[in-house]
Image 1 (cartoon, rainbow, N blue to C red):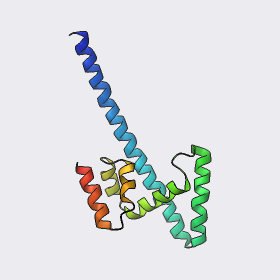
Image 2 (cartoon, one colour):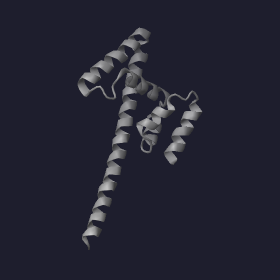
Image 3 (cartoon, rainbow, N blue to C red):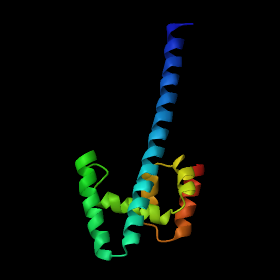
Image 4 (spheres, rainbow, N blue to C red):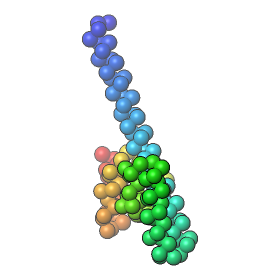
Length: 128
């Protein structure tokens, strides 16, 4: 085996591992965001007080930023997580789609007004 062949094999091993790590990280991040949104939605729904809902998002964002850093836990991001969990209420569907799509793909469909458009996008993007 030549040195060039060895290096080529090693590159392939490294690249395959990187792809798997990225896919695993994307899946974990998307599911984490779904669970955060779902849990906050449950808290807000259970309280049935609109003012509490507004306060809790701000308080949660502040607390999470203090503990985990600002990136990803801004108030706007927390609201996106809540919207995400609301639009895609079935965890099984989210888990299946998250194996093929990243969080940024889901963010793209959140502004769509039509549930069927959203569902079509995630199923066709996940297949491609």
